Image (cartoon, rainbow, N blue to C red; front, side, top):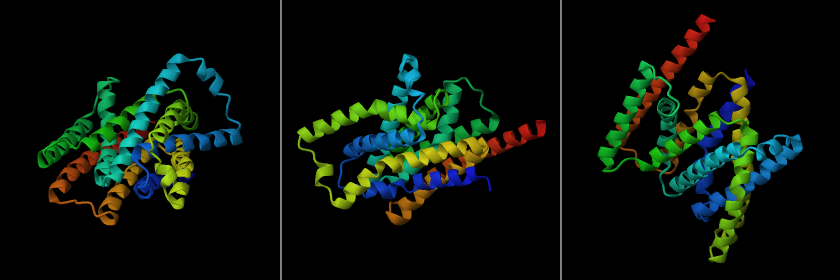
Length: 293
């Protein structure tokens, strides 16, 4: 078996189990969890870069203001996505979070059309239209748009768009993003401490150890994903990415007993049909390229 398949599977499963991890950190407010996650992720990534002696990229990047500006924007998008996800898990919105990541591929298609000027094929237009129907249905049923899902999908889609055009690989890019976020995280933690917010300090020993593990828990699936992307065709990665929101949905329904009635199921079904059309288009285009070559 292509080892990249195993790497991708492990990465998507770890991401799919993230709700269980963040639920275990309920003693610490979401914003504080985010700040500590930034700090410990950087500590872990620095260790990885040091072991691999992979620092040659940093000095040239620091001399390129445009690259730094691009990664500052992607870092802010990534941190916004992280915070919203942590908040949604802590506020019993795991199912809404899963819907956001189901939407992400369709958001990517739409962003490619609007921002990059890419022409959508017929099945892609049908997929975007079906997803819009699902969102409108959920909006009508809830009395408001599914903001959590939409914001998660949009922030991660924009982040992916910036990283798609970035000049650094997965490890280097994530390391630079966490370096840029590190001063913000430290200052925020100092302000929280000065204001008497001691979520981490007052937490139980088990919670503190779990918080300290945020570095490897954040970085390892990203490194696995980066390794898989070099070994596995993009079409295969595109199909496997649904493992993560599917697991999150299962965790939200079966483990945390979040409501998932018929009306909500109809909205999700429309999104799933859209994803089916999107995947079918990807498989068809991949087959055509193989035949042409």
